[in-house]
Length: 104
Image (cartoon, rainbow, N blue to C red):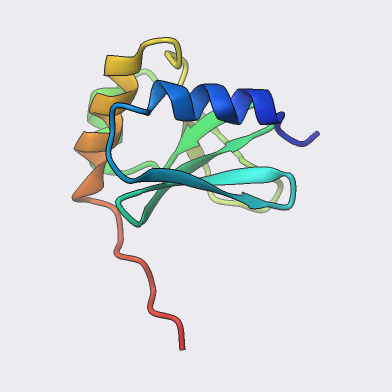
């Protein structure tokens, strides 16, 4: 099941307090970028983020879920209705996220 456009629009609205946040559609799902780095994505209308140390500390009770079969587990963000919580999570994660790979 692909994610709905309405759900990704809702998530982007919740994150609108951040600068340079955008998404890219990938096979019916969406990758989320913050200041050029991949933070996570929306998969089957679920917001999942990379399981970096700062995200684990910010969400100590978060469940691990697979975005799709064969992928690495990611952290499910339950509190998507709280804008400050989401923006705080993305800000905390930013420094730990890998830099984008250079294209040849």
